[in-house]
Length: 448
Image (cartoon, rainbow, N blue to C red):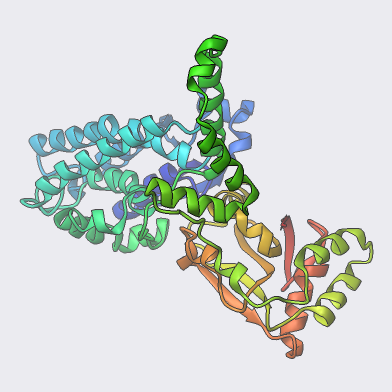
């Protein structure tokens, strides 16, 4: 009987088990079990705690990914993946326990907040991130004198550690910080370049800048804090009338204040600042506001778009009225990693996180788009059609944490193929029915 591995094919812990099996050249049959099936009676018969992955052996079911990895490796001790002797095997266990105890809790503090799954707590996030960096410093010290965690040969301790650390370097630890860990990064590259790792996880994308916490959640928390503080503050007691008289301004000052009120707000602000010897701080303008005026009003077009029942007319109006000197049309495609686009629910969350949380929401004022998830599991794509102010990729997109992983194709409305491709996104909007570039539209959203 061959071993059967149950769970979602893109689950990192399942991929960890599959990676170890590949290193040991142990054939494993993958049985797809979605997250929505974990609570089923059928799966609870495999794991009463309703979690994945689970492996079926000749002796019964095993769960917990690290335990499964130990089981597989013990079945082939001659491989050396569990160490060369009893002492090294204990060192392997030591490093697995270290990874679970030192890294896992801080992973669970930071990443659910980064993904927007739980309310943001900036203090706990920063604290956990600092702890993670301290642990990475410890690993840097270790790898200065050792090629791998245990001696000079790869073990399952390295595999379990790499699965925990890879997300840190993808989202949390920026390029500048990683440069302070040269020995750790040398080990990281050695392990992630293994053919078996690439087969199960694909190439790891290292972030240049750390992903920020979702803006919307931060704003909600800031507002909540302000509300709580305002409730705690007691209303100020009014001063007695006699005290007010003492505090009244002299007549000369009153006349000056009245004169300032009569002036335009900006002039008054400047004059007051000069008198107070304070610099005048003017709000920085968006470069898109400095562009020459355009006869095409994007807000008017949005209203027309949603008022017009005939979708085909919307695209005709856009092509015939858009000012190509002041605005531009684009098709944006996300260049996904090998392990992304497997499941609709996860891909949809990724797409909405990119647009609703990572992209500057003030950009809505200057743009309009139809963006979504297209295709079929396990090969879904994230892409969309956009129109925005200006003729280049704007700063709002360049500041996006995943900007480097998006492909921007500018549409030439004089080119029939370009018009045809753009029109498919604009017109074919029925989810699970419409086709765009031969891919079924699965989940669509407007950016307006």
